Length: 260
Image (cartoon, rainbow, N blue to C red):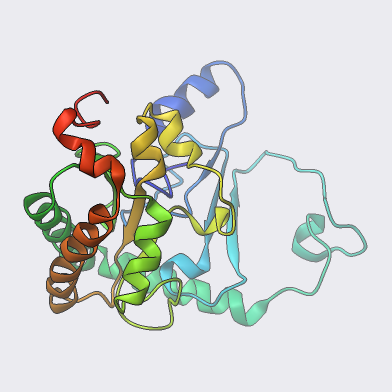
């Protein structure tokens, strides 16, 4: 991944790509989460293939891009026609491709303004939660993160429970056609799974943080009043859930945060 879809960490793609080139290994990067967040230049990046998805930059759903560097040969997975230069048989989604092209132009044009605006809102949300709620862990690199993502773990609170409680408090979940920001326990790719986050496990997060991880995703429709409303609701919801938690009751015996 160019940037992780759960915690937003920007990965060292340039270093990894250079390493692969030294050894003659083809290198593909999933840039779905990065598109529209910072410039992507395939002429500069040492990658052989790169993928993006339209819905992440407000293009129509069901359309994406696979960049293939000249000279890389792929075997067709769907046979029966010569569409897309023999790589994928089937009628091409022309309207979706045009919409994605237009969205790419707009996203590239708006990055210098929209990225710092969204990042400032994300930082306000994250810092506000840290100031108001004790026992919160920020997951992911402290600096090298895309600006729209904040993944937080709340001590003594299950992530799924918190998401449901926030939904009941009026926050929009998994409804990107409406304004606001998204709250989930992971990526849409793993929606419906009850397994703990493999991403948080891979970065060495303690068990309580893996169970309590919640991802807040902001976008171009997110406004400052919505962040203010979230900072009123989230501490109250967490406090209510912790009042029901025997783990939080036993906190006086030693915080599980301290042993992370």
